[in-house]
Structure formats: structure tokens, C-alpha cells
Length: 317
Length: 45
Image (cartoon, rainbow over the protein chains, first blue to last red):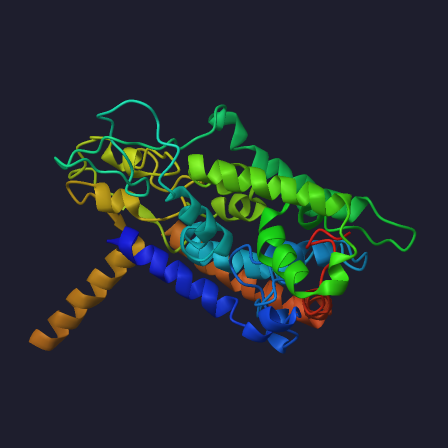
């Protein structure tokens, strides 16, 4: 069910948070008061349509300003989103996650071999209803590469912006400047198309960032969400909250038959029956859809069920 | 039960952090960055 709702939800959310149409028409950015507020997902504030601020960009902006040792304001937003939703943000509320989901739907890059099980994201069903085509999920070295995003969070988002400073004590937003492909795609390219004076300023840095974007885009066609798995500092941060967040997954041990269908369906390749609140889980819900016994439920569903049963008891009494 | 309490404590702490950030002027710093084109972010330099 969620695999049908999710793309629509992601599209609506992206349109709502990036709905400043005038920005796209005139090559300018929104300057309203809402730019003080952070959105949950990675959403460049220099995107012509952005109505809010990116938490990772904002965190670096405060830290590299030379005025603060820590950003209570931005970390407060990030912690609030984390404790409420955890990496649900990645699965449902991140524009760049949505872009990667769409790229993974492109019907090329299937693994050779037939008769293998696939995830609902991968596509490709044969006439007899059995799935015969399957896409790769992980890059080679996956189990080590997943730690790269924590290194990026520590160094590119916190340490380098705070420590590598000019004579005025100001640093650079290292992640935004040297890594973030979301900024290049959602802000850099539209801005350069619409804003002629900026085109004259293109240099080696833009070439580097375009190179990163092209690599991430190509990998996203072959592998499921490589940026989220290996590079995203925001996903790394929210991952710490997955176990404690209000939104969690639960596995009913009595119902679970340990068939492994949840892992097969999971683009992040998580053994849901063993670790339903893994730091890597982006809460897409594909495991719940794939579970043949309905053993996997979310805390949200349990809350709704509880409220409904309370309501019906009150009505009957 | 402990985890449930922790969640509410974290949520309250987050709200307190946001409020503290507003009082120290961090919200304005974020606004100044977000309301103007960030050349580094878009790859210009």
C-alpha cells in the first residue's frame, strides 16, 4: 500500500516546500520569513522554489559564521524531526530521496539471471506473475561504505566549517560546496539556466560538483539510493533516532515466519525481522507490504488502532 | 516506559534548543544565508 502512496506523497511534499514558482521564472530565490525555518529533508535553500531552509546548509552557515560554537537552533530542528520521525524523513520527506527513487524506476540496469525475488521498487514482472528481473541494491563494499556518511557528517558538516577559517574567523560550508549533489541539481542547474550573470562565473568548482551529480545520478539508476546509503549526513543524523523515535516499526514475533521477504523487498537491504529499527531504515514501508503474515506494523498504525478501539468502546458504553 | 519518557524529554529539549537559538540570533543567521543565493552551494564558489 505504502509503495503506491509514497511517490504521490513525496511529489506533493516536494511541490509544497519548493512551490515558489516565481523563483523558477525569474532565476531568483524566495526571501520570505519562512526561510528562517528548516525543512526535515535535504532541500537546498538556494533552489529557486525553496520556501524554507535546508538543515544541513543552515547548520554549516551557523557554524562557519564564527559567531557560535554550536547551533542550538538548527540542531533543535533536526532533533525534533529525528525524535518524531527518525529516517521516515528520508523515505517520505526528502526531495533528493524522491529523485533517487524515480531514477531507480528507470527500467535499465537489471542483474543477469532469472527467477530471483525483487523489491517492489525494482519493477519487471514476467507474464506468469513470477518476478524474473531484479535490480542491484548495494554497491560493492556496502557494509563498509555505509559508515562514510558518518565521516561526512563529522568532517564536512561540523569540523571543517568550524576549523578551517579565514582571517575574519569565517569558514566555508564544506558539504554544500564540495559534495552536495542535491544543491547542484535542485539549485545550481536551475539557477544557471535562469540567471545569465551567474553563468559567467562558472569554474572548476561547478565542474567538480557536476561530476559528483552525474556519478550519483548514474549510480541511482543501477543501485537503490546510493546517496542516502553512503553519503547523506542528514540521513546519518536521523539514523541515530530510529530506535527511539515516535515513529518505529515493530515485528510481531508470533506472526513472523522469518521468510526473508521483508529483506528482499527492502531497497536498503535490512533484515527487518531482526532489526526493525535499524539506523539504515528509511521507513519506506515496502517490508510491511511484502510481509505475508502482517507481522510488521508501525507505531503510527498501532496508535490509530488503539484510538479506534477506544473510540468504539466509548460509543458502545 | 523509559523510552517513552526519553522521547518526550528529547522533544522538549529540541523545542528549548530552538527557542534558545532564536534568542541568540541564530535564526537571523540562518535567514541571512537562506534568503540570498549561496554561491558555494550552487557550485559557483
